[in-house]
Length: 411
Image (cartoon, rainbow, N blue to C red; front, side):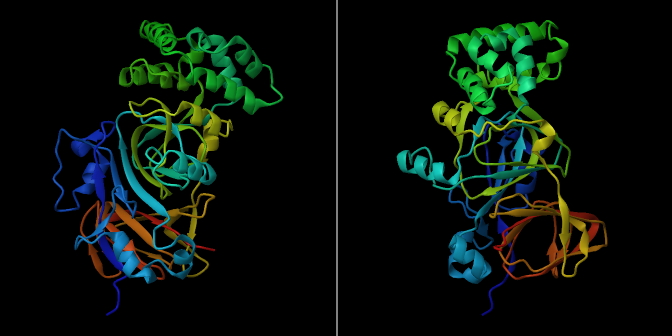
């Protein structure tokens, strides 16, 4: 019997308090494609997971776990992917719906992940790295990497509440064109994240009181509203002061950013498609009620700095069967081997084709209907698995067809 190579799977939804509520959540909206899922209007829906990660594994419509199905049918992974990554998908595909900011965090590189997992397996539950990419579905904002040093220096000289938490020597070193800028930035960030909680609370109270009374200076105007929002979400949290250290990246639908391992970030608001290496390792240090590992975060970061626009990732044309690219499909191709993502947006009644990929893939329909290689796509939220070596033809229905497809190919 021939193994089916294109088939529906059921993604798992979860509910953390930072998620958007009820049908306002794209994760909740899309989860309704599963007839077993019952959306609750007052419940936050934060994520939809698509993949084989054991925390929230996808299943076939029969109830069989996708991981078990791939173990039984390794040809769906393709020889090269199976040889390099074993019987597992090397990527985890998600939808995130963010109402409340996520923690200030970074994900460890492969070597550090192996060390942390060995030393603290109760906290760091696997030994893999976790580079990740975010593509906006709705308008999105997030912290990503450090601001240029000149901008941080300006905040240190103009925001007394922020400066009060940083030793004068560290602040002065950062402001004077340091010969080792990464070390200078590390000293400032480390001092902030390690400041005593009573000092943080006092400085934050003073800052927010000044902002609420209209006392933000022109230099602070771009961050004052965000600081007040974060202070309401996480009262007394040191992470609020990261508005002065980290870039705020804003993305419109279809725009993307890539997050390397060991780089600080935090999603603030919006709905996104996210793809990452298969891992759930997170090192947190602010804007969170969860376990914080401040020493590890301070020691692991790259301390790269630069403008917000440098964090964006530009999509490319996707090459089809011939040398021509499919005009309805764009490729997001980060500089790591575990995954890439295709965005296909087909107008009503039109067709788009994807060449056969030398590895497995998963796609989610975020709008519209139609069919894929003769099988009906009925609604948004449907999630499909595609085995290696299978070309696809999408035909859009009366509402058009919009989908995101994560895949891996081994060179």
